[in-house]
Length: 138
Image (cartoon, rainbow, N blue to C red; front, side):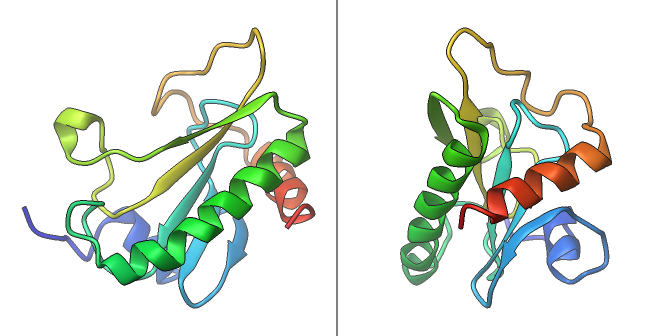
């Protein structure tokens, strides 16, 4: 399969669709997942085009992974989470629904089950607050 440059994440990176940004630089955009599995569910999206991990340039991955770690630490601190799940899906049978490489950072709380992947859409005001809380810990 090939990369589709009109996917929703490419449109968000291009500024065509709004998002709740946590952080942005020349390499990546970090935003809140609008269908969160937990409070603070964040997405890290490289600005370079790749469908997923399987076709990503190794240089992109090298630049991205320190940011994934940084966001995981910030999200854990912002929400006093007991742990953090980092997930990344490759192709539809593995659960990938947007075909632009991205990493999920999901704060996990003892005794609180995660919501379904792609479940209900969160409140925009709440997402904006969560973005600010994570950004404050960067």
